[in-house]
Length: 515
Image 1 (cartoon, rainbow, N blue to C red):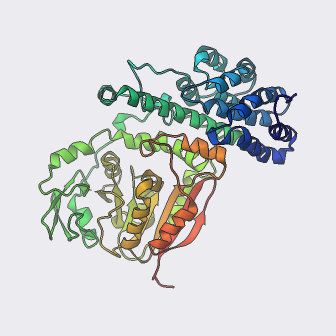
Image 2: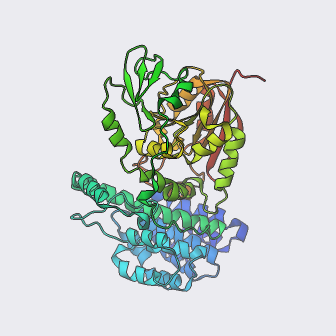
Image 3: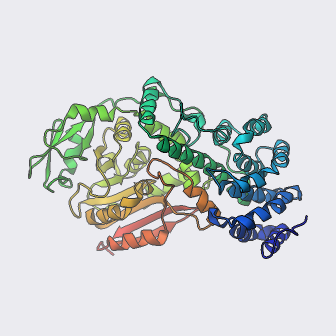
């Protein structure tokens, strides 16, 4: 191997990485990446000069080292996206070598993941890349991501927003296709291009995150998402208990318009202060827009909109989100571990127990098992999710409302849980935590599962690549010190913390409870 065209210190960094013992490969890799990639804004001349020496390392022994190199070459090519240029072309000089290596590498090896991420940056060579991937047992989800990364935008028939967790899991019925066509048709050409580029970054980010984790840790846990859930899986509850579910919690509720108490009656909750009537339909209380005389039929229609999205999220999107956000590629945090944490850490005092950001109710069910469904209030801002939750848990009070202005009295709640939800409203997270502090009784617990940005700059880059509904400018996660500050400002004291990977499990307690 020769590096004569590269000036120090990059020459030395490549040499140090190539010669590093196994326990130093990762550290030397980060030093090298900082010099030539620099978080996605590489110094052009340095990066161009480094590429031939990096490509040459693919011929050296040691699959783990080669996997790291393939990820770095992919990062250098991606630094020019969406307008690929000289740097991508320089990386492409080694494409034949990479494709040959890909064909010869078993699909479950870290090197295979890294090579697939690398070759995904060459849409002009799409047919050659996909031909090299044929016959490899890489799974329908990863194959679909590779295929999508290599596609070029067709401005006359763009397909947008159907890439996470993988294009392979998206199947649309006629009504959903019409909805898709309608919102895409309303976009300007610039908006179409922006959405397309964000989708591409999302699939590249998933491939890169998996490959980088594999280079450092070994083959990821193999998953096959399977088909999307059946639309026939959503069923109405056998019994809709209506206002009876809410009346035991009436003392805790407050009108979002005036702060007055609510009286629950058939089909509505009426404010005793301002007289506002809030619809209670399909087992869900709507407190999002307190307008007197709100149309209950319109609310029922909103509840029925694509209720299978809740099933899709739980079965397909959520596991993929945990892998990306929590670095859970090895499955360290299992469903059983989550359930056990909820059961052992939610410790309510007197009062209702709020599931904040309850979603479709899978973890609301765990909470209800731990404290009793009659104590639980599930709150979310998505009506389709709550419709599914109510179909599963008709004895749980379900409330449509935002997290930044909770419809509850001061010191009225016995405990609050926010499970895999805080990152869904990052701008409102400080206000939501302040509201939890206001509403909790002294001694009540606030139990959180969320995620932090990785301290590793490469892993953090791949996290940020994901453009999701609540993160259209790239995934935004938290800093643990930041969370602690917000909790402290809300009068909450952290009692327990667990941070495997980039997960954050926290249990805090409202100050003033019994010692």
